[in-house]
Length: 255
Image (cartoon, rainbow, N blue to C red; front, side, top):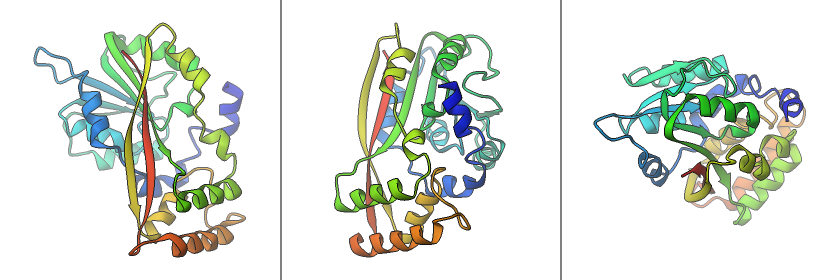
């Protein structure tokens, strides 16, 4: 696992995609936030969340809007800087330079740990030890993914395009069920899911493609052909200038 992650450069690979990531990645459905809120502590406490691998702050902001205190732990300086700009107006937001394996947070200091679209970039064994160190007794961990559902002709065509032009796509976009089961060993792991979707015009679709670390950027080999094929795909399947990307927002958590 560690060697695989080193080869994929999990910390640095998004540095040149920050703007696309912040603007074009999908958000998370209200049902997910309501689900996470069930673990808000009582006795007048607002609750302390560590959003680890917080990136540009997409999930972080949704948690802040619910009145939670949220520490965004992010190792990539460019991604972290974007989150700091985006969330500067939230008094309950704190930014932390750190990794899942070494957050820099105090022992037993958080009630909830969220990891959105990032666990596959982490060493699960070292992350588990760190998460259990910073989690308060009775606290919870939620590993979250927005997973595309290739259930429409458009999404089947999109998946084909990604498989053809993506570099290390399957390695960079995998949910390792055995690793997740091992991570939650002894913690009574459960899983739930919620529907989610994005409606995209062509520029938004293009930005969504370029936000993915495994897809070519301008001046990379294959970029022009990829964009041409994307234009064809959009022209074929758009309705009133939009295509729909369906997701399943999947959550692995401990009771």
